[in-house]
Image 1 (tube, rainbow, N blue to C red):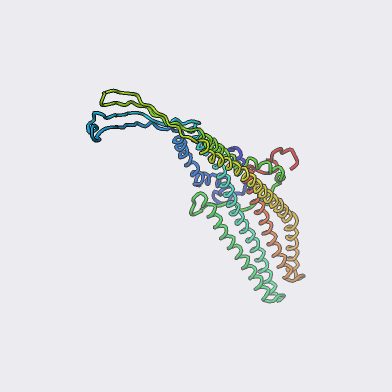
Image 2: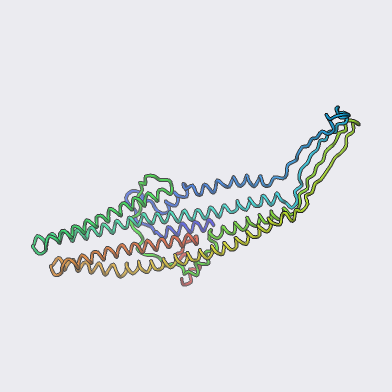
Length: 424
């Protein structure tokens, strides 16, 4: 499991790629992982339960204690029993002889709960890594949105400049300059919005390790492409080892231990006592011994056995339901990723380059007076919208990839998938 978690962390790092350095010392995804794993209390809470369960196991494994018994009979009564002449003093030891290895069965139940802590910790660790990757991606995405907004402002500045020159030459009305200024102001508002969202995303990321005033910088771009991943059928096979299903194996072992404990209750315990009795009248000493065996132990234990068996059956049904739910989530995330990858690639390779060329031609035509401002403005709007949609598709694909890696607990790049020589 440790190797799988390491691979998961490496896969998430690959998902956000090695990003260019910013001023200062930018925080990388691996650094964010390390900070969260050191500081987040979720993992420490699991570790804190381990010694508690160890003490509970030691307590459950204890055998019944010995009891020191003392009794005085036929003393301080009436008639001939007013004195101690006829008194009988008994001293003895008593205890319970447990049958059916009950102490071992009790300890086994607690031990199975302790064994499940490793998988619980692994599951929480995966969830923390995935949440860190998502928040890191959000912060990087808002940084990329700022870059798109800056490019939008640059284009709107060109429009304001050209509109002003044409206004001065008497070739355009004042409304053209005012419209261009309004478009620039709207682009500046987009930059301010992206800057605020970036600050919020940084604060949410820092909150994972207890940071209150994030003073770090991140790399300022999202990877322009999304890598190919393994097919759905291959990923489904990886679900068998995911912590989400491994917890059911732990719960089943606990339930089996409880069934064994319930079965041990069908064997009756024996109460025994052994001691000596002194007869005051004769000054004699005798040995006393006794046993007590409850009847009907099997019938009393039967409901507990049936309940433990029913719990095992319930866990089997619950695991089957969880398996179907996990597969549905896996299929949805896989489909989202492939769709987002297709959309991002089309924007990157076809749509944005074509719109950039069209926008450049419209700008030249407007500058020369061969075209009106409407066509150029519309192309500017479409180009900015295409860049935002391409960024949104890339971010959505990365989020889907993070979810896939959380479900399967390992990287999913085609080169890192099982049997890399086969066609993905």
